[in-house]
Length: 208
Image 1 (cartoon, one colour):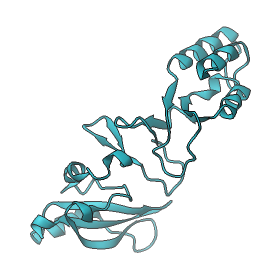
Image 2 (image 1 turned 120 degrees about the vertical axis):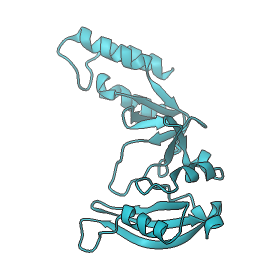
Image 3 (image 1 turned 45 degrees about the vertical axis):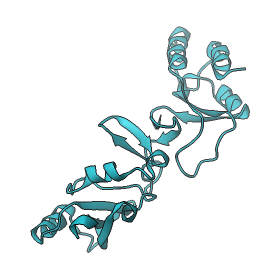
Image 4 (image 1 turned 30 degrees about the vertical axis):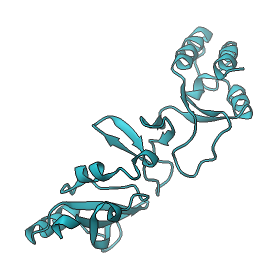
């Protein structure tokens, strides 16, 4: 049985969260079913790969027992407003944080194209170049090492946050470095916490 068949058979049952009008519930669930998302596997780190793939939807429109049944059949169930898929490989990437330390496992290219870090690895030079000399943007993919793309570390252990002493400002750092003759400067987020971030600064070797 397909996921669509299982979900369609559930339309006569009360959804997990819905209207008092059964017809409204059926319309909502039918619309959601027509837009059901799918990914073959996760590109997001830390997730167990499902046997049959990942389904994305607003599961409030369906009975809880039905989504549990889909999981028993080997599907992972995720919320469509928290996930998307990579334009390159079609795998699932989380787009909404689920912890204070979370960082994206994807980048957005050409303003709207989501590309996961697996597809970007080994071919991130153009993306890194797009971040250069922009202190309001930074590389925040820990698995990508700027050194592999011709960058040299200028300084790390910068901190910005709510704790005393965490006052490092990328704009001021950038202004100081450019005044010293540096260019092609890249900021990289090393870690994030509930109230602070740690970052480093790189420069492309052709300018070192």
